[in-house]
Image 1 (spheres, helix red, strand yellow):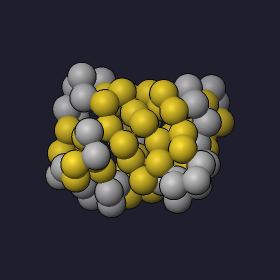
Image 2 (spheres, one colour):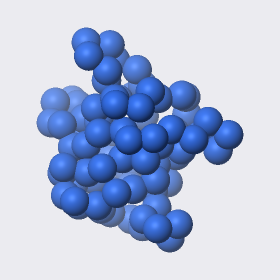
Image 3 (cartoon, helix red, strand yellow):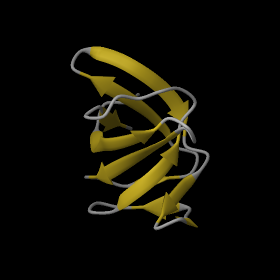
Image 4 (cartoon, one colour):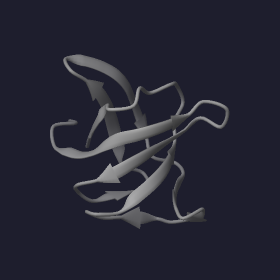
Length: 82
């Protein structure tokens, strides 16, 4: 159940389908994340690809800024829950 806020989307790159997320919690490959904007649930998916500074990583933590491959467009400012 996606109930703990772990970050916020700061940018969405539509051509490559990647969001930039500033993390406030831990995240690892295989986790399920939900993107929400206000009361609207935008997207729920499993983390399959994650990068820090263009290098693939298996996990990231509070304070990290990550690139995350998404299946659909996600608006900037959306909150990320896991």
